[in-house]
Image 1: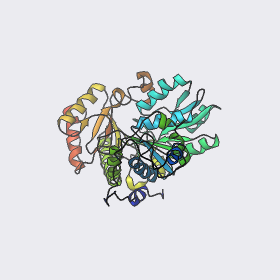
Image 2 (image 1 turned 60 degrees about the vertical axis):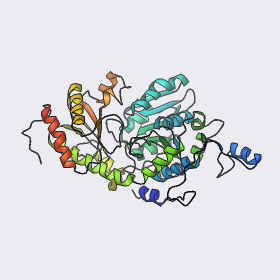
Image 3 (image 1 turned 90 degrees about the vertical axis):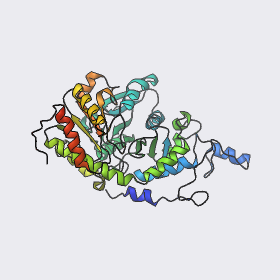
Image 4 (image 1 turned 60 degrees about the horizontal axis):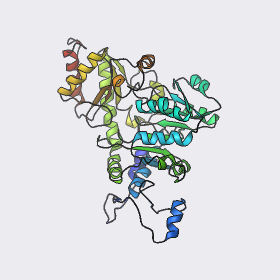
Length: 406
């Protein structure tokens, strides 16, 4: 992949109002006009550089949007008050009553719930498919299908979407490919591989400090403007507006994203290899045992590794809960949902972030009761972390103490 997203982000340079090295924060909900004509033109979307009302746009949100556009290499980007605010705006902007969506079977629980339970109110149908099987995806498309939706690296099973092939299929049928790239910023450049619209939960790796909730849509200027249209823009009318103070904070954190993603990936890869050697069932795209390891290698930006997410299956929910509680007690991380924090976060996906998926469907997907999703932190001595985590597993009988430590 030739696109150097981290360089493009670093090249963005804004001066604050008084020459500050950070852009000034726009702490206003509404903006004045020197003439009534300019206000009218702004309402109609015919002016640039003029701000109307912060639900529509603000300087701070536009700065962050420009950085997100550079991250994915798209013409434009909008930011929202949550990842779900971004996702729902895209879906409702593209789909009308009677339309159909082809969606990956393994996605974030909130997205699943929205597509499974909520959009049926609008007579929108959804087919959940194995996104890694292109023939199944192709067979699911109907004349009413308006989009293919997937996650670049799926939550929580870490399935890898063949974005380039899916993009060709979507283009052939005249529809957009929408990719949630939350798990793999910088690691995968989804838009460069052919995705038409890329959504992110900024809450996670991009912000990196677990202190806010935000989302983004990266796409063409035309689509981003349509989301902000005062008459029929889903982003505008649903009101999922990101606060300017939060936008400014996330923009600062984006400056270190390239450093953090390298360390997240380095640590996750180390632990994945160690625990697989210990005989545990580990899923991590960087392992040769991962069914899409070669696909991941072919579409990733190698500089940033295989990502900071991995799963371990310890057999039962009781064992999973006991392990997570013990690791938290020994200060190895937090029993918490979300990802991208400096400290390792872990949760049993079936009873947390994927709990919206019925148990019978979880079993069909291979989402077992003992599966723990890990967002690996920025630990400086990951070998020390491994020994401590392994010690927890030995104490609980998940691993045998006689296994060699290497």
